[in-house]
Image (tube, rainbow, N blue to C red; front, side, top):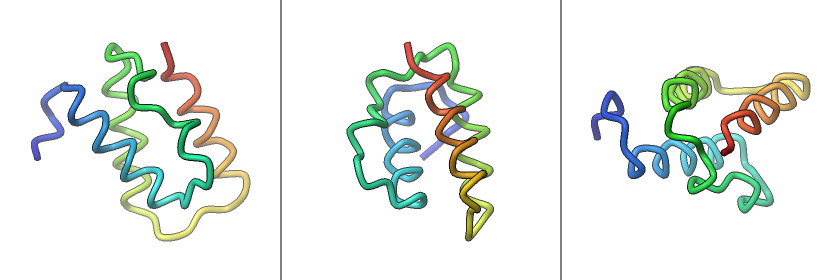
Amino acid sequence: MNLNEESRENVVFMIEEIKKKLQVVNGSVLNPDSVDMSRYEDLRDIYDMIKKKNNFSVSEMDAIAVELGRLRK
């Protein structure tokens, strides 16, 4: 999968991977359809950062949630 290409399919993939990595209990809060495509690069940055880390502190999880919330339409 080429994540350099801005596509809805890539957004869905990244959101699903983020949910898995962060062990999101209520996955409906991260709806790929609500992501503004003009913020694709921001989502990609979050995805890349999350994939590099194994563990997240509570404050990091909160910050990630805030940033993901900003990507919504």
